[in-house]
Image (cartoon, rainbow, N blue to C red; front, side, top):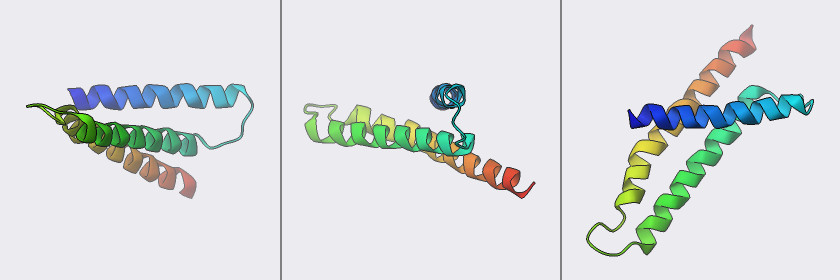
Length: 93
């Protein structure tokens, strides 16, 4: 369930970025914008996890960073892979 929520959040933010780009009259591909937003979220999750690993102390040190890596990064990778596959299919037409 958390995987779906993370995926929907990333897709929603990407859709907003694409809508803003189109309203400004930009000719940038929506696949490129989706990929940029997706990579940004992947780097954001990774940086949070690394920050949590290095600064957390106590019995549950680094647990939130581990959970972020276990839930967030696979979702980001699957969305990026799906974006590339759809782009390749649309490009051939």
